[in-house]
Image (cartoon, rainbow, N blue to C red):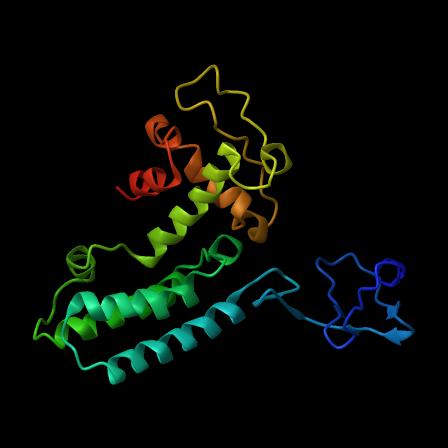
Amino acid sequence: QKWSNKWQLDISLEKTVIMFIGSNHPTNYSFFLDNKSLQVSETVSDLGITYTRTLEFDLYIFKIIKAAYKRSNFILRAFSTKKLDTLFRLFSTFVRPLLEYCTPVWSPSKTGVIESIENVQKRFTYRIFTRNGIYRLPYEERLCRLNTTSLHLRRIVYDQNIIYKIVKGDVFIETEDLFALSSFNERTRGHVWRFFMEKARSQQFRDSFLIRSIRTWNNLPIRIVLSSSATSFNNSVVT
């Protein structure tokens, strides 16, 4: 409150809540802002992403899946064309951004949730191929003909792309703030930018970007890690 008053930046009381993350918190205290009691919430929405006090994102994920299906259906109703490239370009422009906003933050590990997200693209590609009289074509073949990849693979690429940009200094994050170089880099085979992976003591941390992405990053071939540009790096990871 003193900070906001000093800098004349009002804090919205309607949007401010208290969330307890973890179990070791006092339950008999009240928190106030500008002499008004703050409500305790089980969920918080931050920059459009909703998560719970257990750091789970399922509510947000199923919300965007529902919105993505609505947009997919609208595209197929609004456009009568049978051109695969045109229809899938519409999907990539208007649907994919819903499913790929800030994925390094919330990328799921549960098989059922991963499949639920993938089914949006899987169903859309099935419908545009059947519009052209092409039935029973496997999902992987449909992706190949459309020159694209699964949403799951795209999320993995986004994870690795962020680490690549951090290492290259393309984002305003110091590498040491997030990662520590592995002590085995000079003694074993592999690239010199392998990071130490902390022992995860909870499922949430095990599924987090810091653990999930390092596991894949450390196994990348040196030729990919030393790519000359982010675009080249992305293409190499996919192939």
